[in-house]
Amino acid sequence: MRKDAYVGMEFETRFFFSSSSKDQLRCKKEEIVETLRNLNFVNLHLDTTEINYYFQTPQQKGTLKYTVVLGYGEMGRLAYKRAVSHDNNIVANLEFGENVEFDRLKEKVMDSNSPAILLEGEFHWNAVDNYRLIQKRSKYVLKSKETSLRDIHCSIDDIIELRPNVPLHYVSVEFETSVPETKILQSLGEVTQKFQQKISCVPTYNDKMSMFWRKEATE
Image (tube, rainbow, N blue to C red; front, side, top):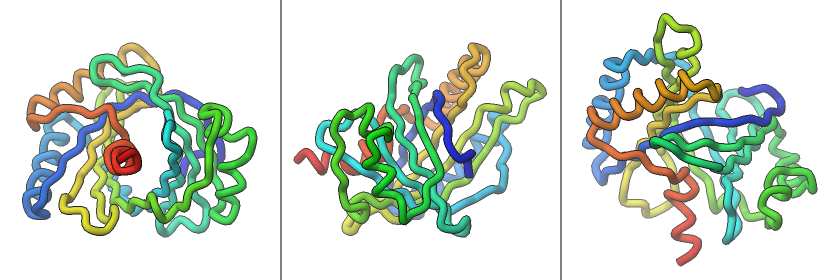
């Protein structure tokens, strides 16, 4: 779990993979893992199962979600993230977050000083069950003799529960760093471009909320 409260920048490149066949997607994930090894990423063996609750208003510009890591008690992480720019496939996000007990979730979301209220201008409470996603996350870090480059991480998320009647299965791959140094950002761009070439895929600028719910909500 992250520290109690934080404000900062996050730089990321995300790829989504989907298939109607679990077996095909499992094969794709094996290819992804092998590619990460070839790119000198090391599995941290910190696999977790997360329940993510997303909140949305019709004209929302950022993403607000509450994450509970199973097996880590009643405390979850409430985070607001908003993209401010993107360059060479890297999206720069402004992120606010804090650890919040589930019983205080609504109070924290609707507080006048919360990022959702301050940056969205208007925010309405939505039933969390309408926007629940469960995923298994595996974490990797770039192995390098240069200490600074170890701040480049990769997460593989298996979406294991989305909503009823979803015909596809999904895997999300996200490369990221929170260190805004030129050398690190250049290395992040190089790594993601190599990954893109080896896997024959294209990055997406959408987060999970945009991928799975926003279109549905506006139809």
